[in-house]
Image 1 (cartoon, one colour):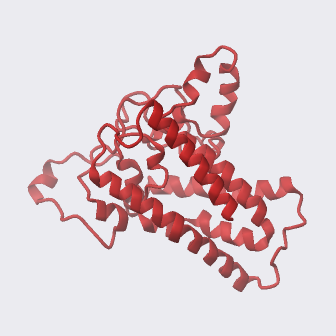
Image 2: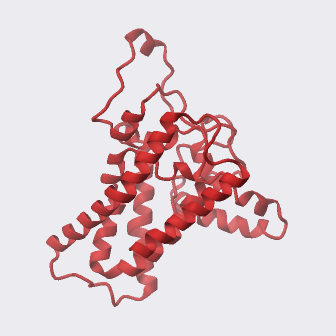
Image 3: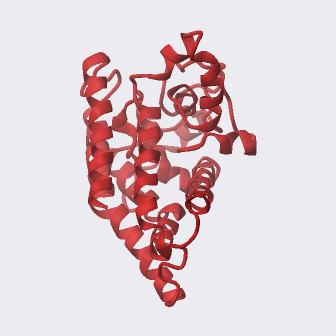
Length: 280
């Protein structure tokens, strides 16, 4: 698992360096001190505390439910193990992500990810701390490691995070591939299989009526094919001009990280009556 973290850290650092060189990493248009706090605290908490604890808890829970099943899947063909991971981990995260844009209290945990008015690898791990504590795919990952998929899961996690980090990066690596007549046909396949900047940026767009934004879709993490299968895909090969949340009241760094333990004071009744309805 340590090699997995080193590899993911290297991918993250590589994209961050590319951003710093080409479009800027530390200074982003619309970024505030509050954004930096949410990103730094959220990222460190996930990597150092939340993710390892939840995966370990999933491992222990599986052990308590099926004490004789440790490494039961270790003899499965690699392809079978991989399909199991994709369905039980990545597809489950698709539905969790989709639910996060449907259920109001769950969106409160996910809103920090969309509150940034820019795209960057900085945004990758930006979520409420409880969002990851409750994430079913992390618990399932722990169970699958218990069942014998540990080494495959480590490699799978590196590939998945490479795609996710690349899909959030403001480097927009897919843009030149769309424009090249030799790679454009290949990209027709790629953008329907995995998440790319164009498809994922659309999910982070601020205005639903701009013809590009699709914050009620494009939920895929590793595989975009789930959006194709379940009817939530929107492919334009373009990027929204603006990012962030639409028609929602302000929030604080504390609320973003620790809601419902920390809540912003409610707006006065008069302000609520004149405020636009939330649509994000």
